[in-house]
Image (cartoon, rainbow, N blue to C red; front, top):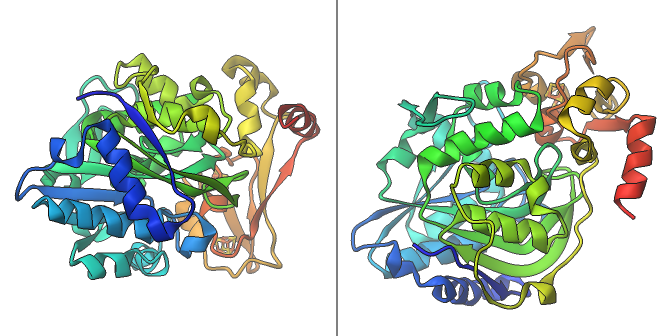
Length: 378
Ligand code: SF4
Ligand code: SF4
C-alpha cells in the first residue's frame, strides 16, 4: 500500500462526509482496504468524558461518516475504544461514548459500539518490541479484519503531539498504560506506544483536524481550528505531516521518531490534495512539552530544576478519585479528606491532569521552564 497523505479543507463538521470521501479517494480509495463482509473496527479517540465542542474526542460526525462509507462498501462497521478514565465500576468509557456523541453516532448508523474496558483483552507477543514484549490487546482489535484509526489532531503534554499512532494506546488495558507511563522518559514512552502500534498494523487513518487542540492537550488544552481532514494508509506518514501542519518538528515527536527508526512508515510521504503550506497553522505547544528540547541525559541531571509539576487545586477537587486510580506511581495521597501529590513519587506523566473531570489538577512551572517556554513560543 502507498504512503500518500492527503489534506482536504473542511471548514466545519456539517460537510465532513464530503471531505472524508475526497481525502480517502485522493490516496487510492476505501475499497483498497474493505471487502464485502469485512468487520471494520473504527477506533476514534474517546479519551475522556467530554462533549464534542471541547475538542478532546474525535467528532461524532467524523465517526458517523466513516460508518456510512464502510457500510456502503459492504463492510460491517464496529466502533471501539477504552477511555483513559478509570472508575471502579468500569462505567467511564460508556459515559465517554455518551457525552462525546459517539454513542448516538453508532446507533444512528446501526454500528456495534464496543467498550474495550468490558469486552476483554488477550495477551499477545510483540515481535521486535523495545519496551513490552508481551501486552494485552483488546479482543475487538484481534477480531477485526480491518482497523481504521480515527484520531483527533491534538497536542500532548507528554508526547507533544498525539495522532494516528498514539490513538492505539487506547487498545490496551490500564495496567499496560500505567506500565508505559511508569517508564518516565518520553522517548521510552514513545517506544512503548510504537510497540502497540507495531502489533496492530492498522490499514488506514482518517484524521479529524477540523477543530483540534492546542496548548496543554490532550484534554486540558484549548480547541484550535485547523480546518482539515487528512487520510493515509500509513499512520506514521500521516502523523509526520500532521505534526508539521501544526508547526511542530515531526522528528521531535517521540512516536514519530520511534516508528520511523523501526521502518514502520515513511517520513517523506507524497502529499496530495491541498498543499501543506496553504493550511499550515501554529498550535501552541504544551507546557510539559518544553522539556523535550533538553537532551535526555541533561533532563535527568536537571530534573529537579526543570519541571512542570502538577498540583491539586483543592477548591475545584470533587474527591472523585479518578486521579488516584489512574496514577501509576501512587503519588496522590489523601490526608483528612484532602488530596495532594507527592513530588518525590510523581513521574510527571500528567495522566491525572488529562483525566480530572473538574480541571482540578493544575501545573506550576519551575523558573527554568518559564524561561524556556518564553523562548520556545516566540
Ligand atoms: S483532582 Fe480531579 S480527578 Fe482527582 S479527585 Fe479531585 S476532582 Fe477527582
Ligand atoms: S501525580 Fe499525576 S503526573 Fe504525577 S505520576 Fe501521578 S498521574 Fe502522573
